[in-house]
Length: 515
Image 1 (cartoon, rainbow, N blue to C red):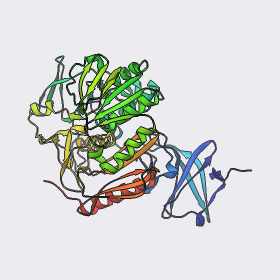
Image 2: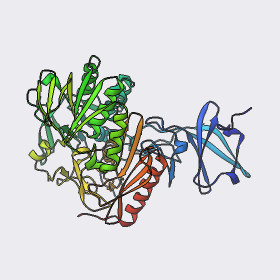
Image 3: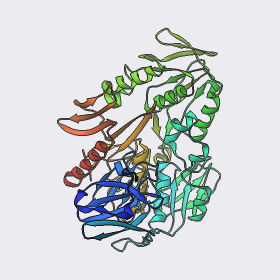
Image 4: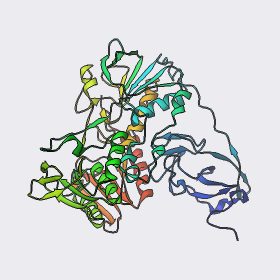
């Protein structure tokens, strides 16, 4: 008997039983395929997101896009092309044929070629050369987008890291637990950069930026001229003094090398202290606990993540960790370390093989400051991500841009935000003049529980909880003066997508600009 849960789409679908806006999954040959309806149009595409393989059948149709429920990657319904991070690879498409009241999925199609963007609309000439400083999410996304847009001039991607761009969110999650092999971590294969004529310069730091002469110089003396520049230098871990602790006792997690060193050290550890109840600190705590290591979290807050998510979710996350054996010492700091024993400010003493410090990051602004760019708790950019110096753009953790929902300058340290800013900045370096209006999104995963957060609320005066926090099936809405600023969801991925789409629609209608 045929499995009705995965129907053969070649046999047809009755159109009058296929509501507008619905997505169905089936098979075409050996391929998993979705069929999406938008009005009187039907589209057949690959069923899985090319980022982490998310099920697009559980996603959302927004205009001409289908969006992944896991991490909000966007794909064109018409072409399958990946439109916004975190996905970069397209999904395949199939030809759809309508005969009477029946829809048939036929053969797989080839993807259309990307039109050249060497000259933008309005006759703006392309830059002769582009330099990107920073090999993280924003820098990589910008380089990738330049080539996707058909730019064929020189692109130089300069990174202080020893590794080619990699999947940073994985470093504190599956990779640290040992579930993700090292080969999963790079965003692209080594051949990608050569094949796309991207000059990837690793282990390199920029020592000087001459904004007037449009030239940067590396510490090794190598100089690069540019017509357009993107600063995507990211952020550095905040390092706090721990009296008595040696360098071998203290670990931070920001880079691939950091995570590898931490995993190596964890292989022989029995008990660890995580200092800081931030996202990175809690993800590290969960990953180390899943390795069987006893974990103590020391933080000055009364609840984990209280400043970012409020006491309600903070308390739920604390209980989740405690259920899995994590011990919290809140309202305390590490006063001193003596050998393998740490004394806390509250008087407790804990044995620890090492300490992991996750107390936040600060944007890497020295290059921009020395070049005379406008700085205000980040590199100030306009709605097109251009800095105070024409031709120089900034994206990612360093950029402070006008939030179209509130009109206030914001700086957000989210991976997906950085990728999408890199993509928009790339198009604007080519003269596109595209506003950055993406709604911020991030996710965290701890002990198998995923939370997704859309929007941005630095402060709020009202929290609305729908569902059950204890059962970890809920939506938490943050409001200020009656206006919805952000929503966090657990086990309600489709709702998170719907909120994102509603916020985007609000931006389109009521965006507040900053001159």
